[in-house]
Length: 556
Ligand code: ISL
Ligand code: CA
Image 1 (cartoon, rainbow, N blue to C red):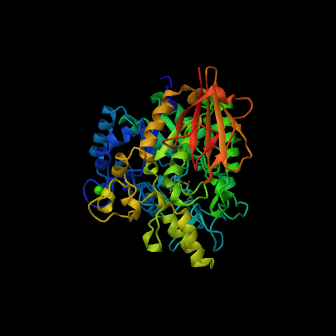
Image 2: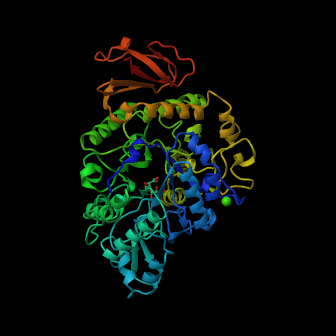
Image 3: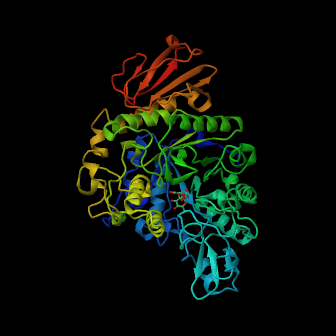
């Protein structure tokens, strides 16, 4: 089948099902809940939904630990509910992207249970079981959530590899049986009509032969032995040829610590591996070394450099970018990518949208981002649910890091900030549920909620709709080149997008000051007209209001 590459014209809405909408009053979002909100999602202009994992799972990592890849978690409903969702989406011409978690399974998956209890079974080689070295783990690798990467099996001098929690054993992709299992699982969902997969930590699936010790580091010791590991490209090509290409399935691979040097090998169209990547470099401009807990202030200049690099990289190598500010692992963007107080919440939420989504690539929005939802003001550890947050807390305490410091860091970086319930209305529990939700609602739901924003023409929500309508009408956003202007300006981000018969200038004020700006010499200001501003009454002057962003188009 010829690839349609429909994703290049799509706006994708990401749902974290546990926190989206609870239809049966148990405090947990579910598939039926999503169905009732499809018209809302469609009203944003979304063409597709990426659903975080909804498979059967003991929920050690909220579904990223899968027990049965072919069934739906009881919390969320059942396979019939999923089919109804799929049908309702088809009626609205929306596509469905499922999460594919292939680096690890749950320890409760039958493969792992077999492997653990019957060492002679063929499932043994589905995972990485190794003997301890003297009284220590098989090597010095550390995992993503701060702990060691090996789990000791009780009463044996034996360990299994797990780069995430102890309930997420890593799977051995070198075993052809494992690859066949995953191809069958993908086919199962493709036959049910799935249009794409977001591939969880897909760039770490191939581990270096012999699992050698790694260079000691502050985070992820051992990573040089599995990030972009030795056979990752072979395995991806195998999936592409055998499963993805024949069904025109779109893929976006989550790629931790990805660089522009490595990325084209995954997503250049002629490589026939993946279609897009979720990269982290622009998310890491407020930390050191890609380690989110090593915080430093956001720098716009650093951010611009990263965006320019990735725009150029994909244009040169026939790849395609993913454009995102938020997802279920990141804190909320409002208040993160500028230093102002939350008093400019509405202005800065709109500004961030314009600054990001006129780049080339596929825009992703994460539930609640379109409302300008903010981080949760949790004060005590028991308000947090996320396994990473709890694990980092334990680890820091062991290292005698003061409590106040850990709590300060968690208040900025916990993944739970993105996981509080979607704020639908001013009703109790934000209209998410009629009973107490699995995680506390952000108390600002009285002010920030869908219902209120539907009735406010100046709301972030209405702006998102308007902006994406405009974006879709402008072919230059898809085809145009990218030029960064005034790269060293610390408060203004200006770039232009140009093709033969169209030209846009995007300008965004990342500060709370009123700022004068100018067009670069090569673009004649008098030939441009203002087509979008984040302020309802913009003055068409060379002066930007606090956190204002604008789009100009060359007159024809
Ligand atoms: O979230 C992170 C740090 O806060 C990342 O290191 C994250 O663990 C990494 O991006 C991988 O994320 C994905 O796989 C994890 C899961 O917990 C995340 O939710 C998922 O997005 C394990 O499956
Ligand atoms: Ca429910």
